[in-house]
Length: 136
Image (cartoon, rainbow, N blue to C red; front, side, top):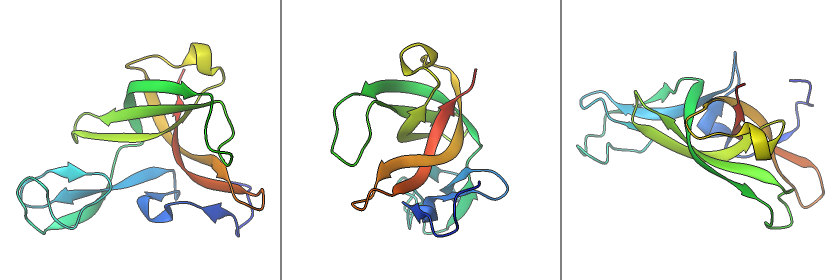
């Protein structure tokens, strides 16, 4: 990315950008259960053998809405979606980008993990984090 190195990042511990954006989930070594974000223990088996593991870059848009009114620091409109990672049985909520929010977002479409502007800081600067983008 061409942003300055001192850019503000929200939840930087939940994703990686190198070599491409991926969410960091947790996977229990004994049960194979996944969580996002990673928990200290598997919430099903209660085993504390959860290791940081990258989710696939692409997921499936399960549900979405277009947010038109929000808190002042969140420029509107923006897409907000639930994205499934079926093989890992994980669902993640995050902002969803599309060229045309009204027409490009469709249920069950493929989306990819990206890093982009999610809100504004009090000083007006951009704050970055993980989000998803519609794949055409």
